Amino acid sequence: MSKPHILIADDQRDVREALRLLLKSEGWTCTAVEGPAEALEAARKQHFDVALIDLNYTRDTTSGAEGLELLGELKALDEELPVAVMTAWGTINVAVEAMRRGAGDFVEKPWDNQRLMSVLANQRALGRARRRGQRLQAENVLLLGPAAEGFIAESPSMLRLLETLARVAPSDANVLILGENGTGKGVIARLLHDASRRNEKSFVKVNMGGIPETVFEAEMFGHVRGAFTDAKSDRIGRFELADGGSLFLDEIANIPLAQQPKLLRVLEDGELERVGSSRTLKVDVRLISATNADLSAEVASGAFRKDLLFRLNTVELHLPPLRERGEDIPLLANSFLDRFAKRYQRDGMRFASSAMNALSAYAWPGNVRELSHAIERAVLMAASDVLDASALNLNAGSVAVGVGAMAAPAGNGQVTVEESEKQLVRQALEKTGGNIQRAAAILGLSRPALYRRMEKYGIE
Image 1 (cartoon, one colour):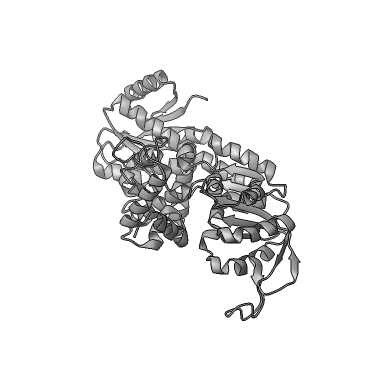
Image 2 (cartoon, one colour):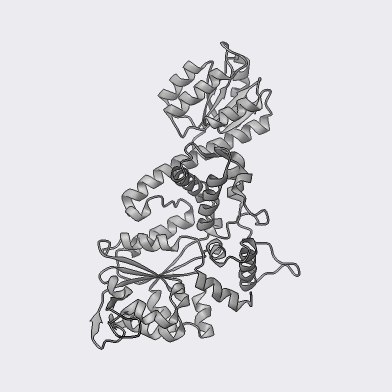
């Protein structure tokens, strides 16, 4: 990795020299200039990882006006350049104004070496994350098609998954996507379709947790007029809608056992009959399915047919949870911030260093979906354009990334998957005052799926 290059602007020679020696000892390359004009000239000629600028120069040593003007001109040249401001005459008002105009952080003279290096390192990391996010977004749109717009994957685990996806997508092999709720299984399914030879045909998504067993056949295979009381006209089913294209069955583990043989038949023969009709129809569908459940355990318990599982998982894709994608968290966070700032007309919003540290340390039990919701809520509710850790309102009880999504209960310190799930369901219901719709959204479940878990764990 190349040495970080910093632009320093300060009218005092001894300050510039002290900063140069400190940064050189830390492995940084420095370009030090004495005023705003020289700083702008340097920024036009080369790229810098960070700029550290004084707010007061010889023309005016108290107001910070020259430094604020330079800050604006640097951001106009390169919007993604991280800028930290420094002054010996700092006041909270000047600091707030500098942050409002785009400064990433604020340091007072005389500086503390450790804090100064921490500020610069954080700003450099944020700048790199923003630039990578822009590059990846452009590359994904070009390489992976419309569904990839805003799709971010730079962590090793995600890059491995995308390599497998690229090999599998052109085939007609059925794909089973495994991963926790909120990890983006639906996005991966859409990428599979868009990268396949079927991309000009339909991509039909079905949430299997939201289809009651009594209407399963009618929804999936269609019905003819008069097939049952409410069948007032013919209706095409989901398999027919996806003919020639891809059918995505989300929450596949929720298919009732009695309906599984009917689905298996279509997968084996490509044939079906609409409810109330004896005419056999042929369909050509590439099946993509997804679940957060352990299907092997479901098979062992008799809740899921083994032969159906074999048909579904010709290829398995394991989507990692967000806590295992640390490199992607800053990129995703900045992408969501840009999206929601535009949606809610809050242009100019950005993260403070404390917010990015909190985002990286949080366990994200709700994965990418929870990250999106947290940032959308922060954009809506924040009083300032700078989002700090408190604005994110993250659950303080959630442990750091890589440790686990929740603390173990009192006792021997061990926690089973079922106990974890039961506790998460209870927490979501308590947090929402028993509102099923909101609790389901927090957990990344459909309403029927949440009701099934409540029944399973005896939660009223």
